[in-house]
Structure formats: C-alpha cells, structure tokens
Length: 248
Image: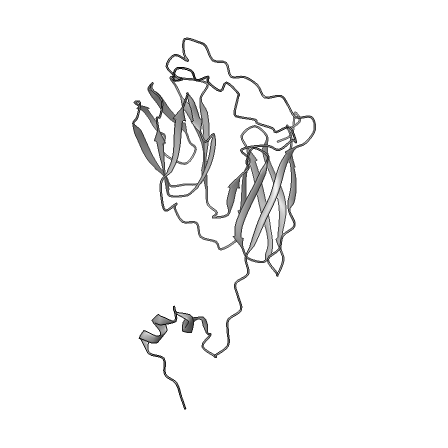
C-alpha cells in the first residue's frame, strides 16, 4: 500500500519531508567549523600610554562625578600579553559578503569612540551617535569610500553607507585625542580580538584557508587555518609585535 503525503501533512511534520534527498536517502549533514585563537604580543609589551588631554578641551566631556578614561586605545595589551582590537579576517574563495542586516553603531561617550575598532561588511550602514553633553565632529579619513565630516550635536546622530573594502580612520576635530577605526571587509568571515586577545570565527567548511591579522599600530601578519573533515580546528596561537626599522 502506497502512502501519499499531502501538503497539510508535510506542514504538520514541520517540513521534515523536505529533509530527504530525491533518491530517498538522507542527505549528509553540512559540517561547519569554528576558528578560535589568541593574538599575543611578541616580546616585552609596551605600557599603556596616556592621551594628551588638556583640562580646557575636556570641559563637558564627563558628567558630574565621572572620570574620563585617558588611556590611549590604539595599542592595548593585557597582563597576559593578549592584544585587543586586532582584526582577523579569513579569505574563502567564492564566498559572498552581504551588508549587515542592521546598522552598526559607533557611539561617543565621555569623549571616546566606542567601540574603538569595528568591522562591518561592504555595503553596510554605520551610525555615529553622540551620547555626550557636548558636540562632536566626526571626521573620517578613507581611501576608497566617500569622506565624511559632520558636527553631531548632543543626542544626535549621523549615518553613512560604506560600500567598499577599506580601513577608515575616524577622528573628532573638536577633541583631537579621540580616534576609532571602521574596518570595511569583503569577506563574511571576520572577528575583532577582545581585551585578552581572543577571537572566534564561525561557519567555515572543511578545508585550508589563509587568515590575515591587522592592527593599526602593529601592521599585518598572516596565518594558516585548517578545518578538518569533522569540523574541528586546532586553536591558533598567534603573535604580533612592533616592526623593526626597515621592515614592513
């Protein structure tokens, strides 16, 4: 006796009928791996440096009772040597990058950009917020995208679509110690290291790939990545350090 599935029956089964291949066999599950690792400073890590901020220019930056963070965010190394704000990208031939479904925010709080480094796919929208009680001027320095230079009043925002892969430096001309980086990528596989230098990138099929590390002060490094057939990948232990004179 043959059994026929009606559309109603398929719907009731939650679409399970569609999980069977046309030849009647169950399709092999899609295996995807996750790349994890840590980027650490090679050699003796430099001490965190303070920003040059005058009391006059800092007026209005902090609410009463609050203290401004004056640490230079361009090179942050943890006690264990982990480097924060390293952009890690993995090149996967044939992969397609899609703009972020929602706008990505860069805020200005107590006269600092937060976050200091963000990564967004080509074609994504970035929104510059101002949560401070003073005006800020958001001035971008881009190689491939249109320049952006606007004053943002307290509680206001401005936005821009970044269409091309780029490393965009962001400054505030009013508070000249403020800086950030918007890294526009052409790959969907990316991450930014946390305070301890760790990162995680999901969704990679088995195979061998090239990873690239980028840091605004330490430059670039490369690493090999291998996702095994079972989806496992050995954690990466990566190093970056200050470049010697004469080397790029």
